[in-house]
Image (cartoon, rainbow, N blue to C red; front, top):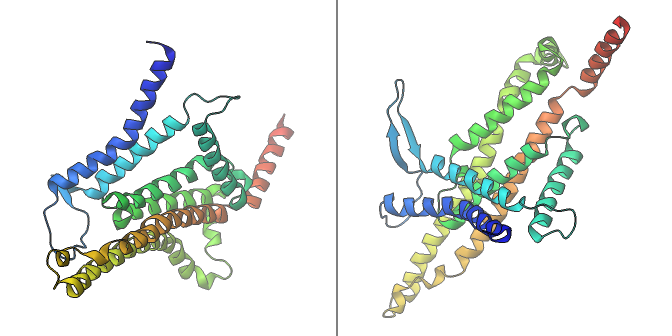
Length: 297
């Protein structure tokens, strides 16, 4: 097999890895989801349950669709970053470089220079959140509509924030809880745990509310269409008023709002991590340690 043909085969396989997970989720939903009438606003469907010693582990739409998003992002990333060149750059390399430049620009503009290598993490958060919300365009359950999924992301960010707050030692961190006055220590402590809770509920609430509003409007238009055109034979059975308007709402709630919430979650991650990092104290301590090492030599 020639090199050109082999490259084309690999590209096709990577594109298949990008598309097939979503297609498999759609087929799985069609085969497993029971038929429903009227308004259907429910949580993630449970596919099966794994018996566990303390509590059974349900495997839901949220988990399956999340893994599908991960595989899709991996396939898309591999496809965009194949055959990188210095000259005669392809369109997909331009796209890959644009994504990297924009992500690194966000990190540079919103975080301390110490976090200059945070681009891949922020890019991952943006991609995972945006693609998860955009699944609703394919008729799938968006993982961001499940509080358990978004709460897991928020807990990860909370651990990251706490890790960098401890960069100057536990005593410095505990001292920060007593500022500006010791009386406010309980409030500061509550504020520490309120951060992941607010991030999770903000993201989850905005995505879920958009999905609920879209379903209610579509159902209301169907009823209104039946009321207005129901007296016309055959034509009255077609929900004419549902044509177009739900699609326009979907552009906002699924496309714009989903991407906006991904951007907000990434911005909050950068703000909390960089804001909690005691940069001046950390670098001052590092300078003292380096000076002691030099004096010993």
